[in-house]
Length: 168
Image (cartoon, rainbow, N blue to C red; front, top):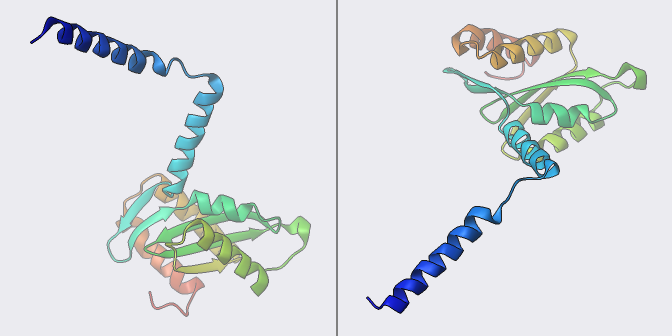
């Protein structure tokens, strides 16, 4: 091989390594914050923790959907658990706003959920205090990764009791 070509290859390689190795430099604090925010956002978009219920499929806490619903002024707190393509939403209304759940409000919630997660096909919403308490406990169990066989049956019963029109 020609010496000139060899020297040129070495010089180009050295420049390439220098550019690649030093090009990124240290991240500024605001860049690091953006990276961390993106990572948290990516984790949230995956729906949080999950457990698998053999009878009904994987149950997941959907914090990204809860936060979207809680962004509505009428809502104080929301817990969302997804299973298959279903979202089960427990709502605690904002008493300071003195509003009641109605079809218009439900439709707005459904629209927000479908905008954020178009894979969700069925959305079931309840303002029942019992359903809210049970869903908060269920979400906690999912977060703690309680085995699905321990929570699956109680979840199915809760859904049947709260939404009797479903054939679960």
